[in-house]
Image (tube, rainbow, N blue to C red):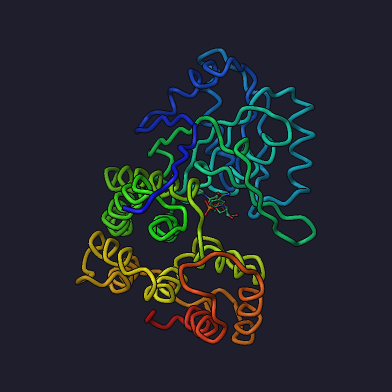
Length: 357
Ligand code: NAD
């Protein structure tokens, strides 16, 4: 066994259908009484359901800010900060996916306010000390233990409304965290266990959700898998796949979860020659892999009926060269050296929607 170091991220998790009823206790546990609720405009009606739950326990929300948006732009954060101050909030509750949780993190790190997350996608931001913010069209990412939310309530009931197609891509986004944890430079046996169990749970649950979005037990299994994968993302370093998705998303305005879904088999194929053990472990938890992890992923993506080419999201063929240039010009650790020609071919395949190999 390889030597390793392991840092467990602190943080409290409350999991289960109906666990939202424990929200007032979680606020009181922090000795707070005036939470600010956060959501996107699309989830403004859904987040309102939290108000009576809090009020029944004599907690009056200080306010509701429903302008969270993709990539956590700092002008929205500034507006939210002013509102936080004006309404006298003493903690923040983010209700939604990575966009809303990003806003919660941005407020919490600037004000020191406690942050309770109620995730409604599988993206995993709630388990990480990472914050990506956009200012003047540039996305910058930082990591700080203080960014990690202190309390996370996983209530499967709020994931039931996540449309089937978003559930599929968000779930594959979660699997991507686990895949890269298997070969992370600073991985450890705990992460391997979480990564394999998380992948197994999602690979089993996602096709059931796509077939029937109202399947509550598949939803619960997917959320459990997403939690485990999120812990991988929050604990060990990511490599080519995440860096490439970051480059593509940021430079060509491509959607987050859909980009992860398209890139994953290709990034894995690029790294495959250097990560035989991870490939074997992954193949073992992907149904229909026949011992080949790439095949297993392809089988899963086919079952999920997801889009496979970045060109379907508006990326131009001419962007392939620029994407390669950015990806090569921004060095980071990866199990296989970043070589321009094979990487260009990887990006071209992602663009075209060809099979990974
Ligand atoms: P998102 O938060 O942008 O949500 C996408 C849309 O789905 C939004 O309109 C949202 O309101 C809606 N939605 C969310 N849950 C829903 C539900 N249950 N029912 C109906 N609609 C719902 O998407 P995301 O993929 O969760 O997050 C992507 C963002 O999060 C990106 O900006 C990404 O960079 C960031 N992210 C950050 C980290 C981190 O560790 N810092 C990790 C993962 C993602």
